[in-house]
Length: 453
Image 1 (cartoon, helix red, strand yellow):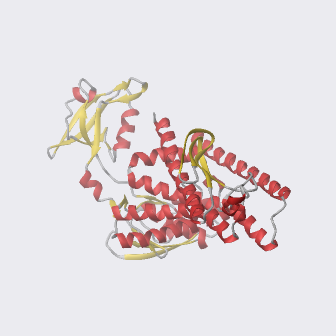
Image 2 (cartoon, helix red, strand yellow):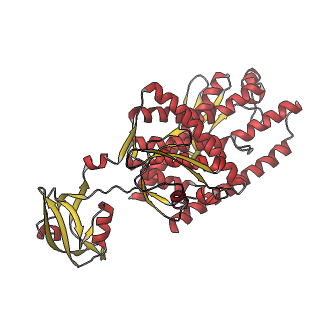
């Protein structure tokens, strides 16, 4: 079921971003009075289509949901009536051609600005960037970073959540391999830390290795589970557990959170456990005879559903929320920052300065799409903004089959004042297709390597 949900989320989210990208080309072509023959979401076999407008443009939904295209009137690919030659793409000025080609990526960047504006206006929730355990042999410890310190800025950017702190730290690593952090300690005093990570860019920018490489972990909220419901005749029911009981320890092991509680139960099939609970402000101990899960006899089963104290959770949470004007200005800044970060990472990936493991393909994106879709509209908008920026940048790469490659061709033809020979164009397109296929296969390999470990 999770796999199916991820696939559906991937198709919907990517489909929307592709539609926005192609709509940029579509609108630009209309503004330049270039005739649009077809506007398609997806490639391959046409599943559904409709013709509309004075030009009878065909609007299509096609089989393969990994892209799309806008087909323009062009003498290089079809016969064009004399009265419509001025509306053919190949007969437009270089400025108009570049405008139409660039409009697709521009639409993706505009979408990210809109998405970030909506996010910041509504409020972006996240966990406060409070330091957890610090390795005493680490660079973080030597820079006087201690457990309980809260990060308030990275470089010249104020941060309120771990997500913004993480992105800012990666940006600092990529920029000059110096991470400048301002923190507040448990006593409320401010302090500064400078982490010199020279020569460690490839290590620290590998997926999930930044915090371990620096030597600290984000603080893990200590949220004890609260019983929501008890399954009738289950071990929990037979032991007298009730709704609103707070679960404090198992066999003397303090329960830190719901995930740890679940793991402690699963690790004790058919065991008799000593469970400490809090009920109406009083502590009670009770013995619980666990059974096993019906679908897996090697895992323990207790038979209750839990949640956590929402008031307690708020102590660990922060919300980035601003006025509409502030949100709009911040959205432009955030989009520019993400464009710069993506280009920086891409350039360093090509030169081998950072790990190519950061490259994700459709499987990885689908997995992430399913995850963020379950977290709500704010997480989904954030994910779509990042993917939209990546899609815009990808299409601007100077590869012949992409917008960037076509813009390069227009620029070359403008300089030499004649069209490139067809053989040269075909050769470059074949190279471009090969490069894209290699990129897709490599990204797919990374996805599968992450999944199967």
